[in-house]
Length: 365
Ligand code: C2E
Ligand code: SIN
Ligand code: SIN
Ligand code: FE
Ligand code: FE
Image 1 (cartoon, rainbow, N blue to C red):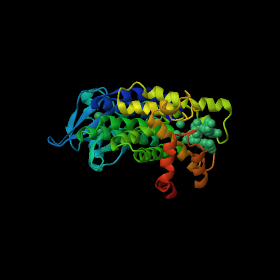
Image 2: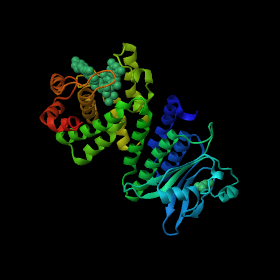
Image 3: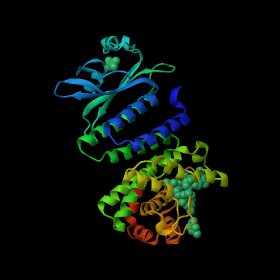
Image 4: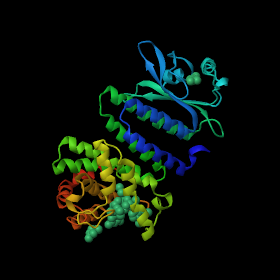
C-alpha cells in the first residue's frame, strides 16, 4: 500500500527537509524533487522532461536510470501530456497506442504503469512534464493520491525552474518547497494549513506597521509559514485531540518548537535561519514564562516576537479542533491583558491601533 500510511510519509518528508534546506544549486534541487516524487508515489523511476523550443524536442533534464534522452515534441505519453496539458495515468503502457516502446528497447527496460503530469509555469503555460514509471507495489498501477503527490512535486519543480529564469532568489523557492512539505504532512491537521498562510500575512502587516522596511517584512512573511513545521513530528492522536491536553500531552506538543528548529537549523541561508529561529522561539513570552527556553524580551528574536502575536491572534480568532473561535472583543481584551506579559507592548499597540486592517481577512469569511 505504499505511502498511504501517514507515519511513512512523515518519515520521508523529514528525511528530505534538511537536504532541501541545504541545497544551493537549482539542478540539485530538481534532483531532490525527482527523488522525492519517486518515493512519494512508489515508482521505480521518475524523470523531468523539458521542452527545447529551438530543436522542437523534449529532453530529460533529470532521469533515474538513463542518460539524457531526446525525443520529438509529440512523442509518446510524455509528448501527449505536454501538448494537451493533461495528466496521463496508464496502467499498462503496452496496451496504449500513445506509448512508443522504442525507448524501452533502447534502455533495456520494461515499462508498465506510467503517470505523467504536465509542468506549468506561473502563467499556466506548459514547460515540461514529470513522469513516474512502474509503481513498485500492489496494485502495480498509480492511484489518485499518487497524482496529487506528483502534481505537488511538479508545481514546485516548475517554480524552481522559473526562479532561475527570473533570477528570483532560489532561497524563496526553497522556503516555499519546505512549506509545501509541511502542508503535505498536514493531511492530518487540516485546520493548520490555512493557519500558516494567515500567520504569514498577519506577521507581514505587523512588521510593516512596527516600522521594518519592505525587505525585512518580506523575509518575515516568507519565513513565518514554517513556524509550526515541527508539528509534523507530533503524533496525530495529540494534534487532533478534541479536548484539553493532559500535562504529558502538552509537554509532547511543546516539542514542536525544537523539532522545527532541528529540521531547519543546518541551512546557512539567512531566510531559513530566520525560520529556524521562529520555529524554536514563537512560543516564548515577553515576560520569560514561555517555552522551550524561557527567553525574555530582546533575547527573543524580533521575527519570533512578531510571529507570536500573529500566531495567537489567529488561534483565538478561529475555531480549532479543541476550542471555539473567540468573539472579536474577547480577543482584543486578551491582547490588552497580555501587553507586556506574553507579548511585547509595542507589538500589541500596533495590533490594536490597526485592528480593522488585521481583522479584515477574518471578517470576510
Ligand atoms: P494553536 O492552536 O495554533 O495555538 C497557538 C497559541 O495560541 C497557543 O500556544 C496559545 O498561546 C494561544 N491560544 C490558543 N487557544 C487559546 C486559548 O483558548 N486560550 C489562551 N489563553 N491562549 C490560546 P500553545 O498553548 O503553546 O499551544 C500550541 C499548540 O498546541 C496549539 O497551536 C495547538 O495546536 C495545541 N494545543 C494547545 N492546547 C491544546 C489543547 O488543549 N487541546 C489540543 N487538542 N491542542 C492544543
Ligand atoms: C512515454 O512517455 O511514452 C514513455 C517514456 C519513457 O519510457 O521514458
Ligand atoms: C504570564 O505568564 O504571567 C502571563 C502570560 C501567559 O499567559 O503566560
Ligand atoms: Fe506553534
Ligand atoms: Fe502556530
